[in-house]
Length: 288
Image (cartoon, rainbow, N blue to C red):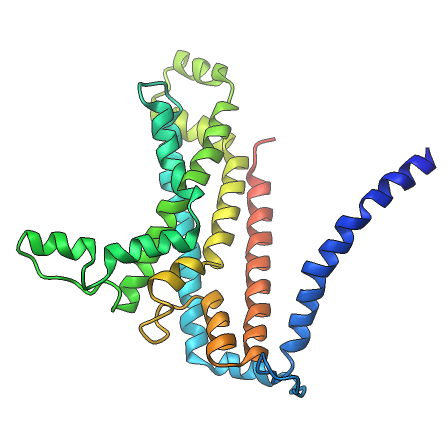
Protein backbone atom coordinates (compact mmCIF):
# COMPACT_ATOMS: atom_id res chain seq x y z
CA UNK A 1 0.00 0.00 0.00
CA UNK A 2 2.86 2.38 0.84
CA UNK A 3 4.52 1.64 -2.52
CA UNK A 4 1.26 2.46 -4.29
CA UNK A 5 0.92 5.74 -2.38
CA UNK A 6 4.53 6.61 -3.22
CA UNK A 7 3.89 5.93 -6.92
CA UNK A 8 0.82 8.18 -6.86
CA UNK A 9 2.79 10.95 -5.14
CA UNK A 10 5.50 10.72 -7.81
CA UNK A 11 2.82 11.50 -10.40
CA UNK A 12 2.31 14.89 -8.73
CA UNK A 13 5.93 15.84 -9.35
CA UNK A 14 5.59 17.28 -12.92
CA UNK A 15 2.70 19.50 -11.82
CA UNK A 16 4.63 20.65 -8.74
CA UNK A 17 7.69 21.46 -10.85
CA UNK A 18 5.62 23.44 -13.38
CA UNK A 19 3.82 25.29 -10.59
CA UNK A 20 7.15 26.22 -9.02
CA UNK A 21 8.70 27.34 -12.33
CA UNK A 22 5.77 29.39 -13.60
CA UNK A 23 4.11 30.64 -10.37
CA UNK A 24 6.32 30.45 -7.28
CA UNK A 25 9.63 31.40 -8.91
CA UNK A 26 8.25 34.45 -10.83
CA UNK A 27 6.45 35.59 -7.67
CA UNK A 28 9.64 35.38 -5.59
CA UNK A 29 11.58 37.10 -8.38
CA UNK A 30 9.01 39.89 -8.41
CA UNK A 31 9.47 40.44 -4.68
CA UNK A 32 13.24 40.62 -5.18
CA UNK A 33 12.91 43.05 -8.10
CA UNK A 34 10.69 45.34 -6.02
CA UNK A 35 13.71 46.12 -3.84
CA UNK A 36 15.84 47.20 -6.83
CA UNK A 37 16.03 50.13 -9.25
CA UNK A 38 15.96 47.80 -12.28
CA UNK A 39 14.55 49.42 -15.43
CA UNK A 40 13.31 46.14 -16.89
CA UNK A 41 15.90 45.90 -19.67
CA UNK A 42 19.43 46.54 -18.42
CA UNK A 43 21.49 43.83 -16.74
CA UNK A 44 22.81 46.43 -14.30
CA UNK A 45 20.78 47.39 -11.24
CA UNK A 46 21.25 47.88 -7.54
CA UNK A 47 19.22 47.18 -4.42
CA UNK A 48 17.50 50.28 -3.01
CA UNK A 49 15.72 48.73 -0.01
CA UNK A 50 12.22 50.09 0.60
CA UNK A 51 12.72 53.16 -1.60
CA UNK A 52 10.21 51.97 -4.23
CA UNK A 53 7.55 51.41 -1.57
CA UNK A 54 8.17 54.87 -0.11
CA UNK A 55 7.66 56.40 -3.55
CA UNK A 56 4.53 54.33 -4.15
CA UNK A 57 2.82 55.54 -0.98
CA UNK A 58 3.72 59.15 -1.81
CA UNK A 59 2.49 58.87 -5.41
CA UNK A 60 -0.90 60.50 -6.09
CA UNK A 61 -1.28 58.42 -9.25
CA UNK A 62 -1.03 55.24 -7.17
CA UNK A 63 -3.97 56.36 -5.00
CA UNK A 64 -5.99 57.30 -8.10
CA UNK A 65 -5.37 53.81 -9.51
CA UNK A 66 -6.18 52.23 -6.12
CA UNK A 67 -9.54 54.04 -5.88
CA UNK A 68 -10.34 53.10 -9.49
CA UNK A 69 -9.40 49.48 -8.75
CA UNK A 70 -11.85 49.42 -5.84
CA UNK A 71 -14.55 50.93 -8.08
CA UNK A 72 -13.85 48.35 -10.81
CA UNK A 73 -13.95 45.53 -8.26
CA UNK A 74 -16.87 46.54 -6.04
CA UNK A 75 -18.95 48.21 -8.75
CA UNK A 76 -18.65 45.26 -11.13
CA UNK A 77 -19.35 42.75 -8.35
CA UNK A 78 -22.50 44.43 -7.06
CA UNK A 79 -23.99 44.92 -10.54
CA UNK A 80 -23.07 41.40 -11.62
CA UNK A 81 -24.79 39.90 -8.58
CA UNK A 82 -27.99 41.88 -9.15
CA UNK A 83 -28.15 41.20 -12.89
CA UNK A 84 -26.84 37.64 -12.63
CA UNK A 85 -29.38 36.64 -9.99
CA UNK A 86 -32.19 38.39 -11.90
CA UNK A 87 -31.30 36.52 -15.08
CA UNK A 88 -31.03 33.24 -13.16
CA UNK A 89 -34.45 33.64 -11.52
CA UNK A 90 -36.01 34.52 -14.88
CA UNK A 91 -34.29 31.76 -16.84
CA UNK A 92 -34.96 29.13 -14.19
CA UNK A 93 -38.56 29.13 -15.46
CA UNK A 94 -39.44 27.29 -18.65
CA UNK A 95 -40.60 29.45 -21.57
CA UNK A 96 -40.15 29.59 -25.33
CA UNK A 97 -36.65 30.84 -26.15
CA UNK A 98 -35.26 29.99 -22.71
CA UNK A 99 -32.12 28.24 -24.02
CA UNK A 100 -31.51 30.93 -26.65
CA UNK A 101 -31.70 33.64 -23.99
CA UNK A 102 -29.27 31.75 -21.73
CA UNK A 103 -26.86 31.42 -24.65
CA UNK A 104 -27.08 35.12 -25.52
CA UNK A 105 -26.44 36.20 -21.92
CA UNK A 106 -23.45 33.87 -21.57
CA UNK A 107 -21.99 34.41 -25.05
CA UNK A 108 -19.91 37.57 -24.21
CA UNK A 109 -17.91 35.47 -21.70
CA UNK A 110 -16.49 33.54 -24.67
CA UNK A 111 -15.09 36.72 -26.27
CA UNK A 112 -11.54 37.71 -25.31
CA UNK A 113 -11.62 40.74 -23.00
CA UNK A 114 -9.29 42.82 -25.18
CA UNK A 115 -11.48 42.17 -28.25
CA UNK A 116 -14.56 43.11 -26.24
CA UNK A 117 -12.79 46.32 -25.19
CA UNK A 118 -12.05 47.30 -28.80
CA UNK A 119 -15.63 46.49 -29.82
CA UNK A 120 -16.89 48.94 -27.22
CA UNK A 121 -14.21 51.45 -28.21
CA UNK A 122 -15.77 51.68 -31.68
CA UNK A 123 -19.06 52.47 -29.97
CA UNK A 124 -17.69 55.11 -27.59
CA UNK A 125 -15.05 56.88 -29.72
CA UNK A 126 -15.65 60.54 -30.48
CA UNK A 127 -15.10 60.55 -34.25
CA UNK A 128 -17.09 57.88 -36.03
CA UNK A 129 -18.28 56.13 -32.88
CA UNK A 130 -21.62 54.37 -33.30
CA UNK A 131 -23.23 56.09 -30.28
CA UNK A 132 -22.22 59.57 -31.46
CA UNK A 133 -23.37 58.77 -35.00
CA UNK A 134 -26.81 57.90 -33.60
CA UNK A 135 -26.87 61.13 -31.55
CA UNK A 136 -25.98 63.19 -34.62
CA UNK A 137 -28.63 61.35 -36.68
CA UNK A 138 -31.30 62.52 -34.22
CA UNK A 139 -29.96 66.09 -34.09
CA UNK A 140 -27.84 65.77 -30.95
CA UNK A 141 -24.23 66.72 -30.29
CA UNK A 142 -21.41 64.16 -30.14
CA UNK A 143 -20.03 63.37 -26.68
CA UNK A 144 -16.39 62.57 -25.94
CA UNK A 145 -17.30 59.65 -23.66
CA UNK A 146 -13.74 58.64 -22.83
CA UNK A 147 -12.29 62.12 -22.24
CA UNK A 148 -13.75 62.32 -18.72
CA UNK A 149 -11.81 59.98 -16.43
CA UNK A 150 -14.63 59.46 -13.90
CA UNK A 151 -17.17 58.72 -16.63
CA UNK A 152 -14.72 56.40 -18.39
CA UNK A 153 -14.22 54.42 -15.16
CA UNK A 154 -17.94 53.73 -14.84
CA UNK A 155 -18.29 52.96 -18.54
CA UNK A 156 -15.62 50.29 -18.14
CA UNK A 157 -17.42 48.92 -15.09
CA UNK A 158 -20.49 48.58 -17.29
CA UNK A 159 -18.54 46.86 -20.07
CA UNK A 160 -17.02 44.42 -17.57
CA UNK A 161 -20.45 43.67 -16.08
CA UNK A 162 -22.08 43.03 -19.46
CA UNK A 163 -19.27 40.70 -20.48
CA UNK A 164 -19.13 38.56 -17.33
CA UNK A 165 -22.67 38.67 -15.97
CA UNK A 166 -23.17 35.29 -17.67
CA UNK A 167 -20.75 33.71 -15.19
CA UNK A 168 -22.88 34.86 -12.24
CA UNK A 169 -26.03 33.74 -14.05
CA UNK A 170 -24.69 30.18 -14.50
CA UNK A 171 -23.55 29.96 -10.86
CA UNK A 172 -26.92 31.15 -9.58
CA UNK A 173 -28.83 28.89 -11.99
CA UNK A 174 -26.95 25.90 -10.61
CA UNK A 175 -27.76 27.04 -7.07
CA UNK A 176 -31.46 27.56 -7.83
CA UNK A 177 -31.78 24.14 -9.43
CA UNK A 178 -30.28 22.57 -6.32
CA UNK A 179 -32.98 23.96 -3.98
CA UNK A 180 -35.60 21.26 -3.17
CA UNK A 181 -39.06 22.26 -4.44
CA UNK A 182 -40.68 20.93 -1.26
CA UNK A 183 -39.55 24.08 0.58
CA UNK A 184 -41.54 26.28 -1.79
CA UNK A 185 -44.53 23.92 -1.67
CA UNK A 186 -44.54 24.08 2.14
CA UNK A 187 -44.26 27.87 2.00
CA UNK A 188 -47.22 28.04 -0.42
CA UNK A 189 -49.31 25.97 1.99
CA UNK A 190 -48.37 28.36 4.81
CA UNK A 191 -49.46 31.32 2.68
CA UNK A 192 -46.02 32.86 2.12
CA UNK A 193 -45.80 35.39 -0.73
CA UNK A 194 -43.29 35.05 -3.58
CA UNK A 195 -41.13 37.78 -2.04
CA UNK A 196 -41.16 36.05 1.35
CA UNK A 197 -40.18 32.77 -0.31
CA UNK A 198 -37.35 34.52 -2.14
CA UNK A 199 -36.14 36.25 1.03
CA UNK A 200 -36.40 33.33 3.46
CA UNK A 201 -35.79 30.32 1.19
CA UNK A 202 -33.99 31.30 -2.02
CA UNK A 203 -31.39 33.71 -0.62
CA UNK A 204 -30.33 31.53 2.38
CA UNK A 205 -30.08 28.44 0.17
CA UNK A 206 -28.08 30.36 -2.43
CA UNK A 207 -25.35 31.50 -0.03
CA UNK A 208 -22.76 28.97 -1.30
CA UNK A 209 -23.44 30.24 -4.83
CA UNK A 210 -23.23 33.84 -3.60
CA UNK A 211 -19.85 33.09 -2.01
CA UNK A 212 -18.48 31.68 -5.26
CA UNK A 213 -19.95 34.37 -7.51
CA UNK A 214 -18.92 37.35 -5.36
CA UNK A 215 -15.38 36.03 -4.88
CA UNK A 216 -14.82 35.33 -8.60
CA UNK A 217 -16.35 38.62 -9.72
CA UNK A 218 -14.49 40.69 -7.15
CA UNK A 219 -11.10 39.19 -7.99
CA UNK A 220 -11.79 39.66 -11.71
CA UNK A 221 -12.81 43.29 -11.19
CA UNK A 222 -9.86 44.13 -8.94
CA UNK A 223 -7.36 42.92 -11.56
CA UNK A 224 -9.21 44.45 -14.54
CA UNK A 225 -6.73 45.14 -17.33
CA UNK A 226 -7.74 44.31 -20.92
CA UNK A 227 -10.83 46.54 -21.19
CA UNK A 228 -8.98 49.53 -19.72
CA UNK A 229 -6.05 48.97 -22.08
CA UNK A 230 -8.36 48.86 -25.10
CA UNK A 231 -10.66 51.75 -24.20
CA UNK A 232 -8.48 54.42 -22.56
CA UNK A 233 -5.04 52.96 -21.86
CA UNK A 234 -5.43 54.51 -18.40
CA UNK A 235 -6.10 58.02 -19.71
CA UNK A 236 -6.76 60.82 -19.87
CA UNK A 237 -3.56 61.17 -17.86
CA UNK A 238 -3.70 58.61 -15.07
CA UNK A 239 -7.42 59.12 -14.34
CA UNK A 240 -8.76 55.69 -15.41
CA UNK A 241 -5.78 53.49 -14.54
CA UNK A 242 -6.30 50.41 -12.40
CA UNK A 243 -3.38 49.02 -10.42
CA UNK A 244 -2.94 46.37 -13.13
CA UNK A 245 -2.63 48.89 -15.96
CA UNK A 246 -0.46 51.16 -13.80
CA UNK A 247 1.96 48.23 -13.33
CA UNK A 248 2.06 47.79 -17.12
CA UNK A 249 2.60 51.53 -17.69
CA UNK A 250 5.37 51.84 -15.12
CA UNK A 251 7.21 48.81 -16.48
CA UNK A 252 7.04 49.41 -20.23
CA UNK A 253 6.48 53.16 -20.59
CA UNK A 254 8.31 54.47 -17.55
CA UNK A 255 10.97 51.73 -17.50
CA UNK A 256 10.58 51.37 -13.73
CA UNK A 257 10.43 47.61 -13.28
CA UNK A 258 11.29 47.76 -9.56
CA UNK A 259 8.52 50.29 -8.95
CA UNK A 260 6.05 48.22 -10.99
CA UNK A 261 7.00 45.07 -9.06
CA UNK A 262 6.29 46.88 -5.80
CA UNK A 263 2.80 47.85 -7.01
CA UNK A 264 2.28 44.26 -8.14
CA UNK A 265 3.08 42.91 -4.69
CA UNK A 266 0.73 45.43 -3.07
CA UNK A 267 -2.04 44.41 -5.50
CA UNK A 268 -1.44 40.72 -4.72
CA UNK A 269 -1.69 41.32 -0.96
CA UNK A 270 -4.74 43.56 -1.43
CA UNK A 271 -6.65 40.95 -3.46
CA UNK A 272 -5.58 38.10 -1.18
CA UNK A 273 -6.73 39.87 2.00
CA UNK A 274 -10.08 40.88 0.49
CA UNK A 275 -10.81 37.45 -1.00
CA UNK A 276 -9.89 35.62 2.22
CA UNK A 277 -12.00 38.03 4.29
CA UNK A 278 -14.98 37.54 1.98
CA UNK A 279 -14.59 33.77 2.00
CA UNK A 280 -14.51 33.72 5.80
CA UNK A 281 -17.53 36.03 6.07
CA UNK A 282 -19.71 34.17 3.58
CA UNK A 283 -18.75 30.70 4.81
CA UNK A 284 -20.01 31.71 8.24
CA UNK A 285 -23.36 32.74 6.71
CA UNK A 286 -23.95 29.60 4.68
CA UNK A 287 -26.80 27.26 5.52
CA UNK A 288 -25.52 23.93 6.87
